[in-house]
Image (cartoon, each protein chain N blue to C red):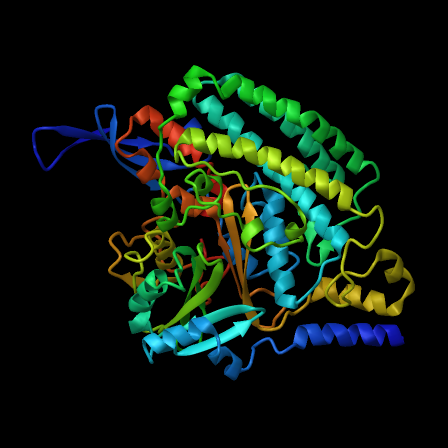
Length: 398
Length: 179
């Protein structure tokens, strides 16, 4: 803690480091604060503590190998990042994915959205003092993680989406499990709302806190629920549909109050919309059919064929030693992750390894709005502001 | 075998389809035309790959072109999604800087590109046009060593301040320089 003389001389402000080790910074974020008593005069986020060089590592892996790194970018929404990356490579290759795989992808990414929003709600409420909400949220999140484990064998780092489709045929009974979950979940959302929506402490901590208006949000490149709570209905699923989202009917919840409470309401409403999408996807997924597109030399051959056909064996060998080489070119694929617009910019030079992979992380852009949200407010409300923009530091730093 | 032949044929076509559309049809593109009508020199090159339009503007024209693209009715690229640099080492000019633009009112997208020489890697900032560029430009400065002229706060963002070298350059090994 140090004190500095301001230009005026008389009044003094204090410079305070919040983080990098601070429970409410959701990872390793450091905010350098200039305080005038309890008021935040300046807030400067300092990032990079979780930088792992994922973009550089991707350049040294084949296209298929790099999928495993995309999980680790946003560890609360691994499947969304799998999807963004796979769609980008598929666009580069000009591949069509079978409808069945597309619907399963939609279903699982919407479950991911629920998963991420639940962690957000639990931790955000805990930051503001409503400790019990976290226990409720993690109880339901556990069910979602069990579905992920059932399908992919992994709870968090699923790597379940592969280029051209899915890694494995989902096990029998998985849809029933999803069905049981979405039957139970609406009543659970009501529980959370009962705990918070009209809770007077919650209202005091969130209403009118962290105002971010539409024009500032757009200028700062903010996307996702944070932008939609400022009245801008930008949702990539509606603007540039991918993976058959155009066949689903759902609304994009928006609010115009621009504060933390509005962002809370938008995310809760989004959970209900995700349930709608999951319900529709369950009806659409055909019980049988290919989960991977048929593209020899790009998609690994079926195991049965590999054991009986020479050609399939050669493809298998070539694929796992050399990988495949897309044509030279570059694509930018955007998708709507729980936090906003995830973009994958992939440059191919015609070799089996990507020449450049750039991840447009929504948290990175959204975190830039933190000074706008918090400056002029109280230092206690800074916690609400960090929570409300829902950052994942793994994604910010990559 | 016949079936397989047809399948391979189809795939080859998909992979080898004229990824880059012919120049003549690109000249008809509304965005390219508007930019050309505004300033003859604004479009150095235009290409399309997988339905994504890329317009290369001369480095000196960047800020003007950006302002025009954001403000002009009918273009209104008000949302800067991302800025990504690519190192084409040992080619010269060495770096490309890509601006991924989105127009929220018109739902259209565009990739704006400038080429930056390796000898003097500098380009003007676009913060006055899109304030979100601040951190993106700092990241590129940090990882590629490209300077953004006019940036108010240009210093490293992800790597430690005393780091040597620019990790995402192609002449920087993946393992780093021995530790």
